Length: 102
Image (cartoon, rainbow, N blue to C red; front, top):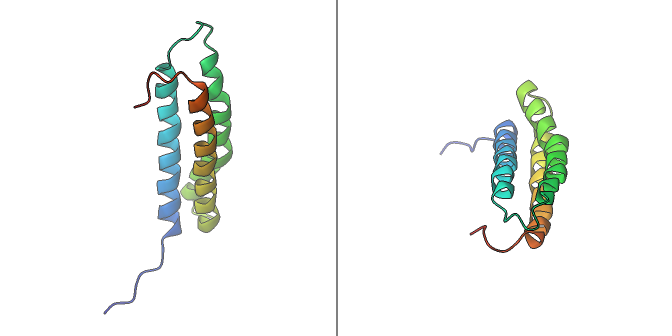
C-alpha cells in the first residue's frame, strides 16, 4: 500500500477557475439566444453582474494559480465564484422568457 497523495489545491483551483470562465463565456451565448421581448435589448444588462462576478472571483483566481500563491484560498475563491454564478444565473433565468434553455 502506498500513502495517499495530498490534495493538489493549485490544480483544483485551476479547474474551478476554468469552470467559472467557461460558464461565463456560455452566458454570452445563452443571453444572445434569449427571445428579443420588446426589442430593447435589455437582456444584455445581465452581462454586468456576471462580468463583475468573473472579475472579482475568477480573474484573481487565474492570477493566483499562475503565480502559485495561496492555493487553498484560490480554490475557495473559485467555489465562492461558482456559488455566486449559480445564485445570479437562477435569478436571471426566472426573468428571461421560458422559450429556451433546454
